[in-house]
Each structure stands twice: as C-alpha cells, then as structure tokens.
Amino acid sequence: MSDFWSRFSRNRGAILGLVLLAAVIIVALVAPLLFPKGPWQMVQRPFLTPFATEGLPLGTDTLGRDVAAGLAYGARVSLLVGLVSTLVALAIGVPLGAVAGYYGGWVDEAAMRFTEFFQTIPNFALAIVLVAILEPTLTSITLAIAIVSWPPVARLVRAEVLSLSKREFVDAAQLAGLSNRRILLGQILPNAMSPIIVMASLMVATAILLESSLAFLGLGDPNIMSWGYMIGAARTVIRSAWWLSFFPGLAIVITVLALNLIGEGLNDAMNPHLNRKGRA
Amino acid sequence: MAIATTVLGRLIKAAITLLAIVVLNFLLIHAAPGDPAAVMAGEAGAADEIFIAQLRERFGLDQPLYVQLWNYVGNIIQFDLGYSYRQGAPVFDLIMERLPATLLLTLTAFGISLLFGVAMGVAASARVGRAGDSVITGIALLFYATPLYWAALMAVLVFSVWLGWLPGFGYETVGGGFTGLSRALDILKHLILPATTLGLFFMAVYTRMTRASMLEVAQMDFVKTARAKGLPDRVIRRRHILRNALLPVVTLAGLQAGQLVGGAVLTETVFAWPGIGRLMFESLQARDYNTLLGVFLISAAMVILFNIVTDLVYRLIDPRIGATR
Image 1: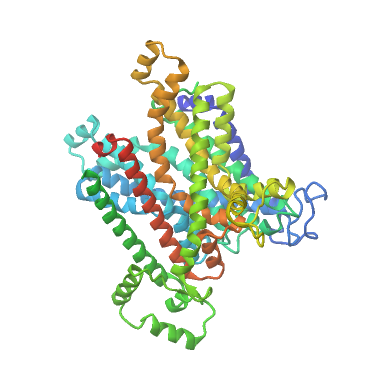
Image 2 (image 1 turned 180 degrees about the horizontal axis):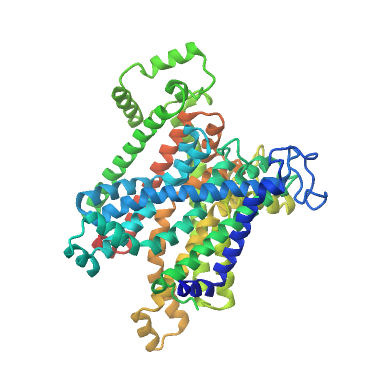
C-alpha cells in the first residue's frame, strides 16, 4: 500500500488532480451550508457582473440567480451522476466480460457481438435518444450514461480474464477442486482489479462530460441545477453575459481534468510494468 | 477476391446491426411514457383524442405487437422513416436535405483533428521529457477535459464577438448573394470555428496516441539498426518510426471518427449549423420523436459505413491487417 502511494505521489499531475477533486467534493458537500437558499432562488437583479457585487462573487444569471450557488449545487449532480453511472456500467460490463472471457465458446461469441453492437452505435446520440424518450430524470440520465459506457469495460475485463485464466494459479485452483464460480470470483477477478479501477476513474470523467452535454441540450433533470444546464441556459446571451457560460464550463474542465490526472496516476502506480514508456 | 468476401461479410454485419437499431427504436417508442401514436406524431402530452385515434388507426396500433414491428421494419427498409408532423415533411427528406452540411462539418473536423493531433504527437515525442513535451501533453490533457460545446461557445466569444475575425453563426452569409468560388470561401469561413472546436477533443486523443505509438516504435530493433547504420535522426524519425507508428493511430482514429457524428449535435446547436445534429436538437425541443429516431438511425448508419470504408482502405494500404484477423 505504501508502495502504491509512493508511486502514485511521484506523479505530480496525479497529486494536483487529487487536490482539485478534493476541492470540488468539499464544495459539493458544503453547498447547502454556503448557499442555504438553494440554487433556484432569485437573489438580486439579473445580469450582475462577477467580482462587482458584495456576496455575489460570480454575479447573477438571466433570472437573477446566484451563479456561485448554481456552481456549488451543480458539483453535487456532476459527481453523483458520474459516480453512480460508472458503478452501473461496471455492474453490466464486469460480469459480462468475465463470463465471456472465462467460459469462451458461444457464450463469448454472443457476449462480444452484443458488446460490439453497443460500441458501434454513436454513443452520445444513443444517450440523447434514451434520455429524451424516457423523460429526463436523474435516474434515466444515469442509466443512459451507464448504457453507453459499459462496452469498453466488458472488453477490458474479458481480455484480462482471458489472459489470467491461462495462468498457473488458476490451474492450481482447478486441481484443488474449486468451482468455476469460485475461481472466477475469488481468484481471477481480484487479480484483474487494477486495470478496472484505472478505467473506472477515467469513466467518471467521461460520464461527467456526458451528463453536462445532455443537460446543455436541455436533457437535464428539470428539478436539479447542473453545470451543463447553466451553460445551455446562458448560450443565447453569450454576447452580453459571457461569465454565465464561462464559469460553469471552467468547473467542468477542472473536475474532468482532475479525474483524468488521477486516472493516469493510478495507472502509473497500479500497473508499473505497463508504465507509459518514455515517461521520465 | 479476399476483399470482396470481406466487404460482403461487413455489409451483412452492418445490415444486422442496423436492423437491431430499428428494433431498438421500435421498443423505445413503445417504452415512452404516453400513447405510441402520440409519441410518433410528436404530440406526447398534448393529446387531442380524435387526432390520436386517427393516428392509432393509421399506424395500425390496434394490431398485435409483432405485426406492428413487422410493418415498422418494412417501412424503414423502404426508406420510410415516418412523417414529421412538426416540420410538415417526411423524416427521410428532412435528413437528406441536411446531411451534406453534417458530412462537410464532421469530415473537416476529422481531418483537422488527425492532422494536428499527429503533428503534435510527433513533436511531443521528439522532445520527450523536455519542456516542449510537457507543454504539448498539457494542452492535450486540457482539450481532453473540455466539453466541446463549451469550447465552441468560448471560440464564438473570442473569435467572433470580441475579435470579429470569423462568423460564429450559420452555414453561409444569409442574403450574401455569393456564387461559385466566393460562396465556397464564405462557407469555408463559417466552417472554421465549428470544425475546429468539434475536432479539439479528438485532436487531444490523437496527440496522445501518436506520442505513445512513436515512443513505442522508437524502442524497436529496426530503429536501432537504422541508427547503427548511421542514418540521421530526422530520417529515422520520418521514414522508420513515423510510418510504423502511424498505422495503429489511423486505425483507431477511423474507428472513433464515428463518434464525431454524435458530437456534431452539440457543435451544430451552438453554431446554428444546418445539419442533422441541429435537426436532432430541434426535434428534441419539439418532442418530435419520429425525427429524433430517424436521425439516430441515419447517424448510426453513417458510422457503420465510415468504419467499413476505413477498414477497406487499411487493408489496401497494409496487407498485414487482413492476414492477422
């Protein structure tokens, strides 16, 4: 573990990512304390410029709502949707890939055809269609993102299981009389964890981008303030009120960047043998 | 001969995939809250009972589900994607009218992202571990994390609103009366911002891939041989490393290019670009599900077609690809 940490912390980008993500998480947690009135309340007249009014550091939007409050509450949605949709995608992709890789044969064939089908469909277009038709709610958005994100997981897990199941410790387990299920769950999958964790951290970042893009198009949960919604709502006034689109976008960039940096750090720390070559 | 078999195989697979998407569309229409007739007519929520009853009869919704599915698939095979009551035109015609603009946008974006991505990746790999490498990798990391609709908005703000260099809206100057070459130039001016911002994300992806691929190939034995026989570094990099490093990059690039079609929804929305992405956004706002599903199907078809074409091109360029599969 300390070995892991020392490798992780050698990557300065990863530490920066960790700090940034911690900041976003803290803001998300304390949002109700900082802005007890919530993000929807009209607090001042509309279109107040940032850094000009006391108590409203980022100004107000087209309806006189506090931009800073919107940002803080938006962090909650982004993190929540990013995390939960990734977990759901793992719940689909890991078992499917594991079974395909371990049992092989027609099971593998069927599972991979199924995965390929979902990989062929343009991701974002499918997410749009799903959310639009199922009505935009937090649940449908999370599900839609999970549905378009699981295929790479299934492929990764399949490849890992396929190569691990040829290893000696699996032969030993078979000789010891362990059932297939126990070998898969107890022996193989734990050894496939590190690449899955790395991929998951990058998936949270992609999921946050997807969620914000959907919300930008008006496919956000109408009861929840999100960064994408804020940018979408400010799109038409970009010429007169640039800050309304600028700050939420910056928040997205920071959060996604942080997660990507962490993912790279995890990759370097957990798969040292796969370390990207040439990285001094 | 081998190529003909491959094409046939790929086409059959493509047909099956498209059929599965059609079935998915059918299921989605029925999964939608509210009456399927209303959904197909884009009237969900605002139901006029008599109108809906007429629609139900027209769409044969009184028949068993499998008959409906059969009819639905039959229609789509004949390029009948239904009627957009909102736009007052068949969905297929609406899409075909707007497809050229999307093709122009996505293909340009693909070209830009691949060209600059590879150039940046090569430049980074030549300076590995030094400041230039860090700057390029940093830029790629930043673009990789930037939502493309936000990049589009910021580009409009800077280059169109503040600097006034480029138009930030539309496909050509409305009422400009340009013809021939001057019209092409006018469209090109309108194309620069949308195509660049749409390509940014993939430019970052290709930069990272090219850098990694260049560094990997540089470790190989034939590069050592080339160095040992005294070839200048520049020549080794261009003739030996780049040529071999490029292939996996271009292969993956071709597979991912399809995703540009999805991104086009965002870019076209920001820039009011009259393509199928914009059509998708309009159909979202109007709850015009027939058009929405039609655009979805056609964009999937575009992705599949693009994948087949890239696959064939690579087989022609590099015979090794066909042999290993």
